[in-house]
Image 1 (cartoon, rainbow, N blue to C red):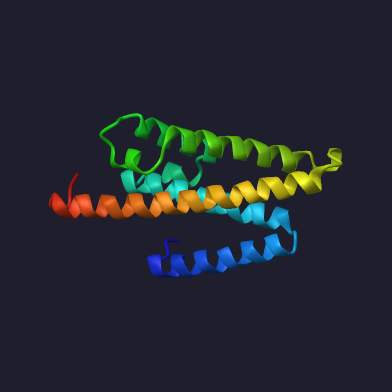
Image 2 (image 1 turned 135 degrees about the vertical axis):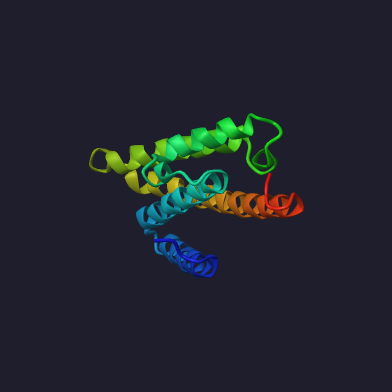
Length: 151
């Protein structure tokens, strides 16, 4: 089910408020989950702007990030203006930290401190990808309008 950009904007604002509340009450796992969902949505949105593939709905987030990485290595792509290989690497590292935290909570006596660090990094990365996705989609729309609807 597709939603309008207005509806999506309202959902994003709602979930950013939830992240702020979660962080202030030290509900770090909730903040991490919401950040992960933002990354899923932003990476899907970036790739969907380039392709209408149904496979995006079932594609793992690391696969989406690697696809974005492949796109930006082609220097003439608009996307390369907004995201770097370093952004992709930082995000994959965060995903690894998140996965390690989630899958080892019962074995890690430091999970509370670790979860705070992963949550704080997740917030920064989610914000970055929201910004990347928004700027990229706007630039793409502008380029399409300039070229008569095609790139």
